[in-house]
Length: 495
Ligand code: NAD
Image (cartoon, rainbow, N blue to C red):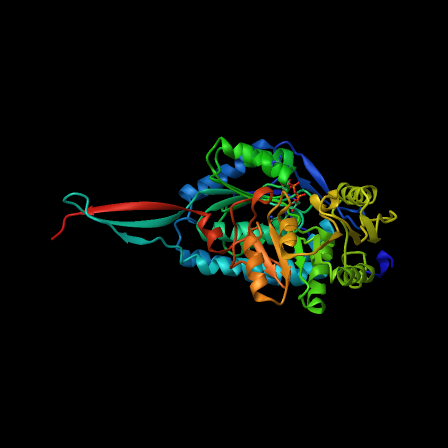
């Protein structure tokens, strides 16, 4: 197929500038970075690259709005109405938002327009519903000497939240951070990833149209080591919410450690999919394959350690091979494609490096492998049979590379599943409810999907353990993480 066969929807670019206090501005030193289409190499935009001075200005603007502006003082119901208006605008602009993601980082346009973008709207809608229901508790207390006492708690916004997001689901992960923070009355400075900044800039434009006041949502596009580091270490922020790699998460934790600010780290994963002998394989196989190949495996929750009982392992391998061989790897805007591109040359080299390591370490390559290079950063869906000791089973590859590992007993499956530095999520496939419950209980992860795989739901907490991070976002826990609980003791004289 040629690019001439492909029809892209019409879309316009947001202004590729920083958004500080409602103004669209270039970086103070004029710096920019280039965003390029990973399918064609064409330049998409030259985007303002914030430096320390720009980050400082954005944090100052967010602080000013928080301390002296209307957002934190307006009623929760009013904030909820604004977030609902934003949800409607996101839906109305779904095609543009999805096209920006496809053109910048190679996600299938179809998956973004039908998946990420409507889900992002739902996240805003969910937290809009919470905005006027943020409450504390009341507690009756024993007398203190002659004094009667009564206690209560209130939940108040934190102040300025710094949000740093990755490139793989930019609008959706921005929504995970923005929606609860804004619902609770905080102001935000967000730094999107340099490989996918434009949908976040468009989101901020839509937020302004929705009536969210200037200074509430500030965007500092820029390089991680410059703008990201300046934001994460800024003394003027009250919380850092970071989603990205474990290596960067560790450096952010070291900044936060000296400053006592709140910190959420949503890091990588290497999730096991445990497939027992009583699984309904016909129903399970599409989920198992999707957990490996959806978005070219560039998903934190990807289930690339496929642990299959020895009695079903051959069928699981066959099912994955069929899915890999039927995949149509191609331009993200082409309706025929079922997989788009890897985000950039560096990430593709990393994926191919892991495929080479699987082969050199003696894992059995069942299908796929390193793809002949052409225009565009395309990877081949690849299936190995291996062990949990192979590097391909230990490291997060962030590419479409499955390692199938056979097990004999339930205990062995649990031991392999937990033998990892990560702890984000796991999938369990079984028709036996007792087995499901006991396996779920023993898995050291933040989330378990049973008989399926999918997107975190805004109503349920999401986050990892161990090398997958600390803290939770989404759900009630996520909202609580964007507020500070204040305890009040009232002393009063009895009648
Ligand atoms: P990354 O860590 O390279 O970058 C993430 C963000 O951090 C980007 O905005 C980047 O510019 C910024 N950054 C880079 N260096 C920085 C520094 N020194 N200080 C502050 N910020 C800095 O990650 P990525 O390649 O964009 O994303 C892929 C990773 O994200 C994978 O490991 C994936 O598993 C993880 N991820 C996790 C979740 C989750 O919910 N747990 C979701 C999506 C992605």
